[in-house]
Amino acid sequence: MEWEGFRHSVEVEIRFADLDALGHVNNAKYLTYLETARMHYFRHLGLWDGMAGAVGAIMAKATVEYRLPLSLSDTAALVYTRCARLGGKSFDMEHVIVRRQNGTAAVAASGTIVVVAFDYRAGRSVAIPDEWRARIAAFEEM
Image (cartoon, rainbow, N blue to C red):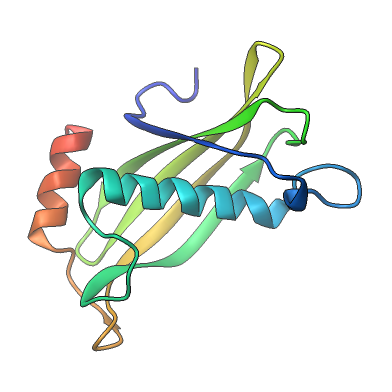
């Protein structure tokens, strides 16, 4: 399965407000689901709480491959998340959105988000904090 090897997952509720006129989850909502999963990952590892403090994270690039539509009839969307690369100031988060419907599971989308460590007070990118690097490496067994 394409989500094997991922150590973190979160279930995301598909809401009526997420749907487009054709009854599918709007493509922009997939990015919201990935963002939700990333924040759960950050909180799970004790990296960042999402508040604009001294150092946080900011998205620099997003790539999403849409494979299957999500709809309100899906039981849930399960989003798997992992850190695939740790650079100096940025890191890559890989995601897989799995559609669960009628006892089956299939990949609805996958994506990679480039995240930059960002000093919100100074308004600039910074080196990934050593504590973040250590926690991510330990969690992901890098």
